[in-house]
Structures are given as structure tokens and as C-alpha cells.
Length: 331
Image (cartoon, rainbow, N blue to C red; front, side, top):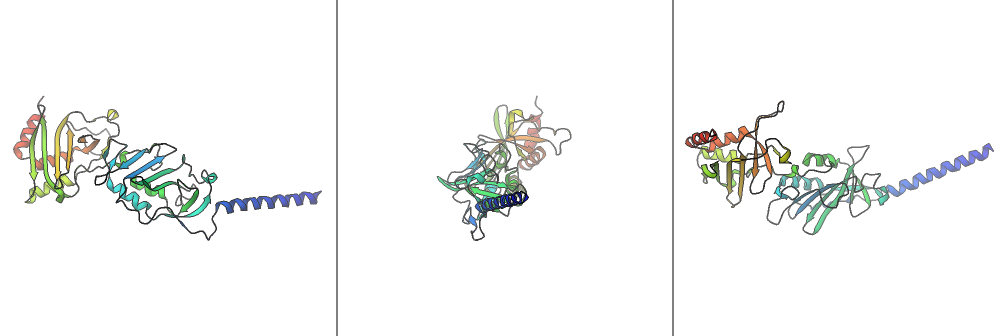
């Protein structure tokens, strides 16, 4: 009897071992399987027309950044706001030439590798109607430096020796936040970055329902003072995007100043500044901020009030500064 039990125990152990080996063989590629090219090494920003991010099984992209041929990038999922083109470039750099080692095949392994559509980050790049890449990305639950990736239209699961989610977080924040926010993709530059591209700078004040030009500079910007103004304008950036103005203290109400910057190419950048700076919240870092908004359609941004005041002082002649000071005290 004891011998029979021993024989049955050995047979059961062999069956368990064989079953485990077969499962391992099914989901682990043999050493002869070459790396899988997930994204071509020729991937480039030029020609791309859309970038989409989603978390969870959703029908429409939660974040969509698009552009028309010859036009700048814009955030279609947030007021069509101007998009930060550098972030798009960094995503392309992150994905270009991505290869992985096969770890499993078959959709039954998706949950184990956290690559089900309700588990992973979905990242899509488009060129018109052509889908350049459509990937589901996650990280290993036991080794954070290893990423798991699969093409959405396939069932081959690959491992990459990179923390892709961590790299994505450096580009736009938490890549698996639900739902993902569109605001990190909004361009925070208020005006063109290249001073050489500027043709004119104009500052107008809203007085008794009318815009009155208080100061302006036009190319050529000869002399140290005009060049200093142009460099200061070109370097201005907002602090943050106001995601929900209705729920934000100090949101934009009445316009006070309007900046208009024209490039040599004819492109126009227009910005309105709110009438009153907001004091910082008790205990919050930094000084007062002021609400600004891009024209014609937003979005609303927050800006360092002292920085904008300093810029106005550079642009306005002394007489205009006195006039604006009087109107600002008007009841």
C-alpha cells in the first residue's frame, strides 16, 4: 500500500512538473526567437498628425493632440489649446526604434502581464488615416525597470529593459492616472521663443470699454533697450493651466491689459491679462499671480504677477506708466 502511494505521488509530481514546463514553454519564447520591432527606427515627428493617450477600456481617446499639415500642434481634448510640441517630440524619441523580447503569446496571458485594455496605458501615433503605432504599455509588478508591451492588434507580449511608464511620467506626469489629464500637453509659452522671429510687440490697456495702446516696439529692434524688451517677451512662460476656472479662486474676470505679438511670418500671439492680481494662499510658496488667457479661445493660465508688471515697465514709456497708474486707482 505504501509503495502504491509512493508511486502515485511520484506520478503526480511528474505530471505537475510536465504541466508547468508546457505552460512555461507556451508563454516563454525560445532563445532563437529574435527581438520584436515594436516601433520602427525611422519614426519621426514630421508627418505625424495625432497623438492619443488613454487609460482603461474607453471608446474615444481621453487625451488627443493633433495638427493639420503646416499648422502647430493643439490639444483637441482641451479647448483646442496650443500644444507643447516639445512633449510630442519627446514621446517620439521615447518610442523610436523600440524592440522587445517575446515573453508570451495569446490573449489569455494579457491579465498576467497587465496588458489588458482595462489595465494598461494605450499610446497611439497617427499619420492621417495611417496608424503608425498603437501600443499597450505597463510595467512588471516585480521589477520596475522592466516594461511589458504589446501591439493592440496582436497577441505577442514583449518585455523591454526600460521603465517606459517612468519615462512617460517625465514627459507628461502620471501616465496611468485615470482619467488622464490634457493640461500637461498645453503650451505654457506665452509668446514665440525666438526673439529673432518677432516683428512687433504691442501693449494696450482697457479703459472705459476701449482698448488704448500704451506702448509698442517694431522691428528693427536697434539699441540695447528694444532688444532687452524683445528678449524678455520671448522668454515669458505661464506657471500653470487652469483646468476648471469655475472652481478656481481668482479666475479671469475683467481684462485689464492685452498683449499682441506679431512674428515676421505673420503669425499673431494675443494675450489678455486679468484686472487684479491674486494674493498667494496662506502658506503657499511664491508671490501673487494673475490670470491670463490666450485669444481668441483660451485656455486660462496663471502667471507670476510681478514678472508681468516688470515686463510692462520695460515696454511702457514713463508718461504711459503714470497714466495707467491713475486709471488703475479709478473707482
